[in-house]
Length: 267
Length: 269
Image 1 (tube, rainbow over the protein chains, first blue to last red):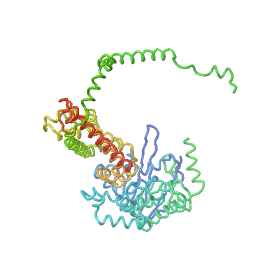
Image 2 (cartoon, one colour; image 1 turned 90 degrees about the vertical axis):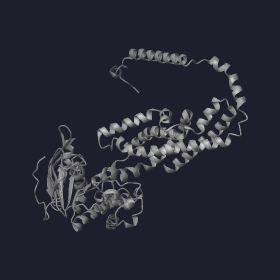
Image 3 (cartoon, rainbow over the protein chains, first blue to last red; image 1 turned 45 degrees about the horizontal axis):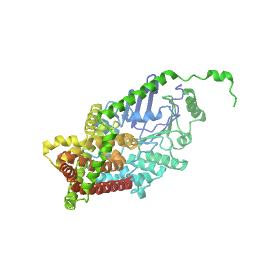
Image 4 (cartoon, rainbow over the protein chains, first blue to last red; image 1 turned 135 degrees about the vertical axis):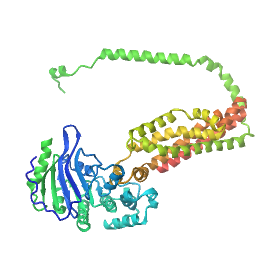
């Protein structure tokens, strides 16, 4: 892969990036690197779409960023703090700076929507009060309600998570991320299990959160159309490397074809 | 269907048919030898069973009618048996909940803790509760308390193993989601693991209670009190009419417990 397209027309809002990824490497098997020195910056107010084919390493990138998967080398900073060297309580504290949204949504099925949203705040509830959801502090419950209102699902607060539709469940997961009060949101294919309309709603919500709350959103996607529509910047990843950075208006069909051509090359 | 002769020639031959046949014959001879040894070892004989049928008739004759005067004692002893199983199972439930997070390979914080928890589970599960009771009666004295403790110790192993396997099979997504948000291990266990596995845990515990009622009969024989002890004593003293009453009460209690446990479990899952 060439790096010819890098740096061209990548609009960058002012301010220090909330997520900084430098030279990140990861291989699950010897001599089969998944990430080959990825760099990525996401600033507050941006929704950066990471676009790439299956197996290009984009999900691994997000998981390495909060060390759900351990990177082999490289550096990740969340809100200016290096997460790569942290361990134990320090790691948990730093993880609170980034909220993750998953393709499979991952709500606790047998709990209602409101409880699921409060779980986003577990990292900042200390001691005995965090042991039972009935003992959670009032400000946490209040922030959960506000997050749920923010995603437009306050009326579903008492409904069990396994009775929500896919789109509703993903919006509850976004509310959980908001309740975490992180500066960075990492969304791993958040709309791949949703129908087109729900997918559109979810991405519109993420874009709105980025601009009006000033959060730094990194979103892995498969859909070039949605990337063009909602991304403030589009980063193309192929075979573990960044192959281009574009604005949504300057990205071409050739750029996109280039990404998916890479998949064919890899077999 | 036409197959060319060339294709037939290319088909691979069945591997080592002769070796396999020899293996089968040796295996069959071995199994027969084990059965012959076992039959002789236990002194089994069809003749003894046939000539003993007269004794059986005598036994039944001496058991009817069941004695009425021990009915009240049988019922209260059955309640002691139920209490033994209840206390034993409940203690085991709490102890297993403490040990399970370490015994499930997908949650255990450290390899050594995992191995340690697995050793505790394997040890307590392998040894039957009445063996534990034999030792515990010398610790806390004869009676149902020793029996309940013995049942608790053994059930830590059985429940702990089933709980850990349930957690290992559970969906890990919510666990990852909470971990990713910076939740501690205890928080993840309480809010993501327990809600997912609680129905299975309740069902397994109810089933264990059912089994433990029967186990507490055996602990009764070795001095743990309850209906088991009563029956053991009656038979030792050749009071077969009393034993018959106790057996009937026991039958009713066991069927009732099994039924209730089954109904409750079907409501949960």
